[in-house]
Length: 132
Image 1: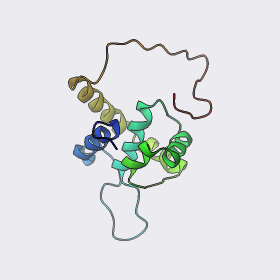
Image 2 (image 1 turned 135 degrees about the horizontal axis):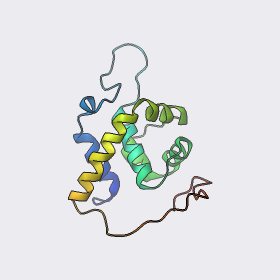
Image 3 (image 1 turned 180 degrees about the vertical axis):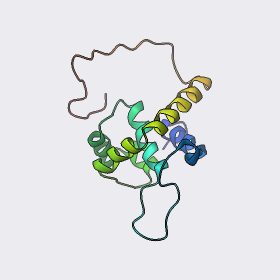
Image 4 (image 1 turned 45 degrees about the vertical axis):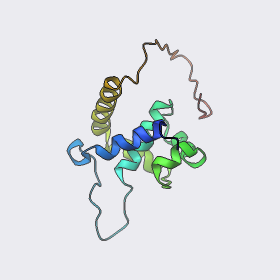
């Protein structure tokens, strides 16, 4: 990844978060049973998806399997769409607070422009899970 790529910003952002205080589950790894996915990796996936206007769990899974920009912050992990969906359901409040912090950080760093975005909600433009 280039030094100034958004994936590096996302990765650095999630690395400095206190995941336990934000309320994310499965922070501590247990010595027995199957390991759950690290919530930081799942958060990397969600932030990247939202920045690219990809919201569906299945579309996020597809992007993760074919797009190197998503593979890099996921560190080779490949959770299925059900795992991605469950993470969102279990972490709704935590995700809301994390996105608030992320937006505030981006605003302070001057990463947002002064443009206007209009969305027509009558028709979805994400039918085939492709990035614009």
